[in-house]
Structure formats: C-alpha cells, structure tokens
Image: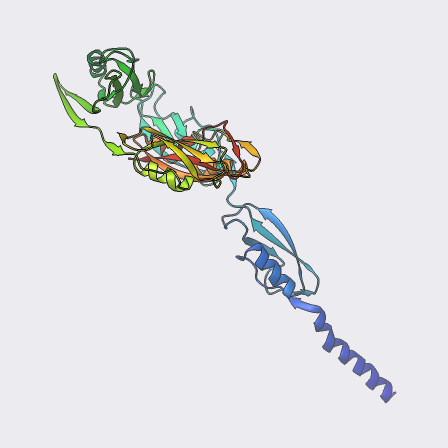
Amino acid sequence: MLLLVLVVGGLLLWFFLTRGDDKTTVPKVVGLQETAATKQLEDKHLKALPNTGPSSQPVGVVFAQKPGAGVQVDKGQTVTISISAGPAHKTVPNVTGLKLDQAQQQLQAAGFTSSVKHVASSRPKGIVASQAPVGGVTAVAGTTVQLLVSNGKKPVVVPSLVGQTQGAAVSQLTKLGLKSQLQNVSSSQPVGLVVAQKPKAGTEVDKGSTVVLNISRGAGGGTTTVHTTTTTGSTTTVTKAAAATSRVPRVQGLAVTAGLRRLNLRGFHPVVRYVNSSEPAGRIVSQSPSSGTAHSASPVHVNVSNGPNPAAPATVPKVVGQNQASAASALKDAGFKVLVLFRKTTDQTKNGVVVEQQPVAGSSIPRGSYVAIFAGRSA
C-alpha cells in the first residue's frame, strides 16, 4: 500500500509540474502594426485572427485585442485583433432650413460638430440658410460643419452686370449698397464692358459686400489694373493698384507633384493632362506657356507622362465641393494618389472645401496617377 501511494503521488506531482508547458500568456499587441502583432502572438504559440474596423488609430495599427494582455491561455488558442481602417466616414445630414438648435442636434447625433456664422438671408431669423459641407456628402466623423444662420436682415441680391458698361455697373452696385472691385482683362468684347462678375447674379449677400467685375480692355495686351471702389455718402473714391504679374517657372522635367507645387506657390493655376510618353510616369514632359511673365491666376498647361508601361485607366471622380478629407478618400478609393494644394479665398464657407481638381472630373488616366485637389484657405 505504501508503495502504491508513493507511485500515485509521483504521478500527480509529474502532472502538475508539466501541465504548465501547455499554457502561455497573451502579450500586449494594441498599438502595433498588424504584421508585428501577428509575429508576437506566434512567438507565444498563439494564432492571430484579424478584423478590420474604423478607428482613430493610424491605418493598419491594432486598436483592440481579445483576450486581453496578461491572460493565461492554452497554446494554439486564437487571439482576435482589431485592425484600424482609419477614421469612420459618415454622411453629413442636410440641416438647411432647420432651426439652429435642431440643426446642431442632428449634426451631433450624426457624429459631427458645428460652427455658426450669422448672415443676412431671406429666410426667417434663426434658420440655417446654408451649410458646408453640404448635406449628403461623406466626411470623417467629427468634422466641423459650418452653418450660415439667418440674422433676419434682408440681404442684397447681386444684379446681373455682364454686358453693362463699367460706369453703369458701378453705379448700380453703389445704389444697392455694394462695393465694386474692377479688374481689367483681355477680351474680344468692346473696351469698358463687364465680361464677368463674382458673385454671380442672383446671389444673396450682406449689404456692403464686394462684387468683383472683369472689365474688357479689348483683345490687346497692357497692364492689368485693379480698382477698388467705395462709397461714403455722395462721395466715391477709386483706388488703383497694379495687379501682380509673375515669371512663369519652368517645371518641365520635374515630377508632377513638385511642378504643381511650384506653379501654385507662384499664384498660377495649373491645368493637367496625362499623355503617352516614354518618359517615366508622373514626369512633366511639356508646359505652356514655358517662359515669360503672366498675370496671377493665369492657367499654365502641363502635360504629364503616363510612363512607358501605364497601368489600366480609370475615370477621375468629381470631388469639387467636398471637404478635403472626403475628396482625398474618394480619389484613393478610385485608385489614385492625391496631391493636396491650397488656394486663397475670401469666402469663409470654402475653407477646407475643394474648389478645383486637376485633372478634371471625367478624365481617364492610369491608376496610381496623381490627382491634385485645391482646397480653399482664408486669405
């Protein structure tokens, strides 16, 4: 009996001393890239089961795990790791026409914040007259939606001035309580006629707002002059200043990203077209104009190489009017790289909103090519 007891006791002791070899401790992998997290788990004789989900963590980083770190489990057990797909995108609700408190509640419930600016509007006081981003577009959760709320004051409707003489247009604006800013431009129209205006006719603006008028100086050259007209009582003062001109930088031979940045920095508006070429993909192969001086905001056309072995073509989606983050996401989803540039604007509602894209929407270019988006930024 004594011998039997010793044998059983030895067997039990051996069982309890050796059973720990089948156990392992779950390591902490939150905050690691997926590949690094998987390796750490495998080193501990565990299996990784990745799931992808939205998170504030960078894309590809583990933001949750189950079981948690420090738990002792059997070797070979599966640990579920949640991999970040980046911030969640949500649809911006349309709150135009609602009372301010209702609009803010809806935005908050949808995961957005809001900023408020009171403006003149034909809508009743306290009603949201417009919003940016507009309702229906997708945006990163937490994005601030700017609300323009009616202050109850009657706005001034910008009249149609194209085709009028400079004097008649300025006089009409003055009577309405609006200021005028005149820019002389080359045009086939007779000298002194208004050929374009901003804001466009029918736009509601606050009294005292400025309307930019492009005045024809004929088809000839000459120096561009900017006139700012203000009215106090019955006295009208006109201030003149020469508009800026700049030397067109040479960007031929540069990568498209470097070339567009240089043109944008000098105040020019690049117009991009992808063309077949044996040059490396993404290199600017020609530009027009290629030298000389030009007025600020003039277009400069650049041809960019598709490369000797271009990828399959894809259609560039329209992202003008979307906020910068949503536009970049839409372009990446379509298979393109994104170059973000900024353009000065006096319209606060355009801050962070894409005002132009190059190449334009509908262009067919190779996947992986760069699409430049120009987001508004307060001057």
